[in-house]
Amino acid sequence: MKILEPVKFKNLELKNRLEWLPAVSLLADEEGYVTDELIARHVARAKGGFGLIDVEATGVNARKSPKLLRISDDKFIPGLKKMTDAVHEYGCKMTVQLIHYVKQSVKTGWKYPIEDFPIANGEVGKDGVEDSIAAIKRDFVAAAIRAKEAGFDGIELHAAHGYTLSSFVSLLNKRKDQYGGNEEGRGRIVTEIIEECRKVLGPDYCIGVRISGEEFVIGGNTIKHTPKLGQLFAKAGADFISVSAGGKTEDGAWYKGYSGSRCMPPANLPEGCHVYLAEAMKNGLREIGSDVPVIVSGKIPSLEYGEDLLDKGICDIVGVCRPALADPDWITKQVEGRQKEIQKCVYCNLCLEADQRHEPVICYVAEAKKKAMAAKAAK
Ligand SMILES: Cc1cc2nc3c(=O)[nH]c(=O)nc-3n(C[C@H](O)[C@H](O)[C@H](O)COP(=O)(O)O)c2cc1C
Image (cartoon, rainbow, N blue to C red; front, side, top):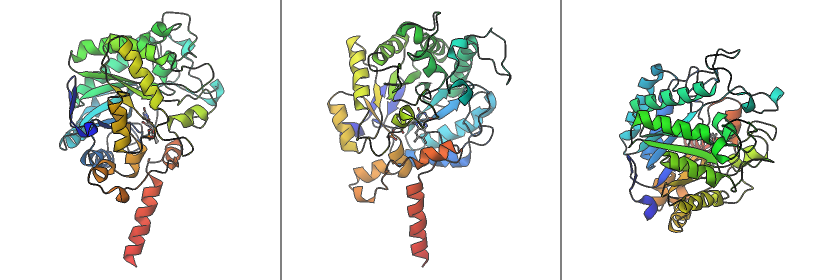
């Protein structure tokens, strides 16, 4: 199967075309350092057969957010290096998703005040963090340098869902300067970060971008806009585009409104519900003669399903998140014909609810089953 065969793009030589998608774990400690629990989580998926793991959203700036994994200071490098070393032992590559976020509250209608940027360079907000455009770019570039030092095989700029870069690329960005307007303007901060990272990371280091193919909010990006953004990112030097969906907070709440729910599609949505978003991105890239790989995500039910997408040329890498949170051996069990043994994800999103309560993100169905089995064995 093509999905299980090696593939190479840039410095990334993957043993197969399967990525464990980024998922906030809340397993970092209060300050954002890697813990042994977090390493164990990733080692289990590396052992379980993934060619690539993209580590959860990892903070490039110093703003408070308990238990968010961080790369905002050199002090985080040793812990991150311990994690990449452990995962590499199993022939699995590791990228890190770099996230920048600003303050967001119900008072501002959950909207990032993206029109308020830039505050003057050097000026800091009430929490002591500088939010100028220059500072955002500086934080990403510094984090990218640390990522390479920490042994990551590449970086992914988080321009999906409801955070800073996503708010820039969104059609809801009403800025009147060069960082707003058409796709070129809205995507400018991302293209500039790609170009600046490229200068410091060298020509072969992998730089990718994750974007919401559709934002699923009134007035937001749709597939009319996002392939154009993908084209701009590819032209600026991006090495892959990972296509997610929704995740905006403009519809009222943190991953609780319709857009939020499309980001982690629940049980009522069909399998492969976001395949068309990856397909639109792939076609957009083809239009400009780009072969930059596209990563698909969203309720991919099996290796066969992923293989079909590869055969049809819809994507280049198949991304899976919750099914492998439920069962780290999701791949191996399918390869070995042990499908019946898979602890299936039922898309109940209790994992997401744990995230929203700031508790460790686990699969409650898998944990309940483990407890029941242990109780049975003890009888
Ligand atoms: C608890 C939880 C945390 C997540 N955290 C992130 C994240 O940090 N960055 C990101 O881009 N996507 C994140 N996602 C979205 C996933 O990467 C993925 O796109 C989504 O779950 C759909 O894939 P799936 O159907 O295979 O689970 C998260 C999803 C869940 C359930």
